[in-house]
Length: 75
Image (tube, rainbow, N blue to C red; front, top):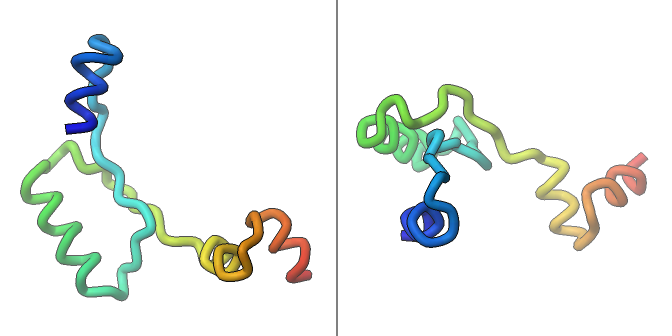
């Protein structure tokens, strides 16, 4: 709905390029299942590359700090 609203109301020239899998963990069965479902449903609209959840991001969130500050602290 949000995509449809953006394309029709906010910017009628906006076009969907595709879907990107982010925060992906290949070791989790649920992530594999969702990837399979998305690729079956949206086919070529799902981008080939997936982007994993960065460990640095998780650690920074746990410490409630921006990543750059947390990485400097970890040295």
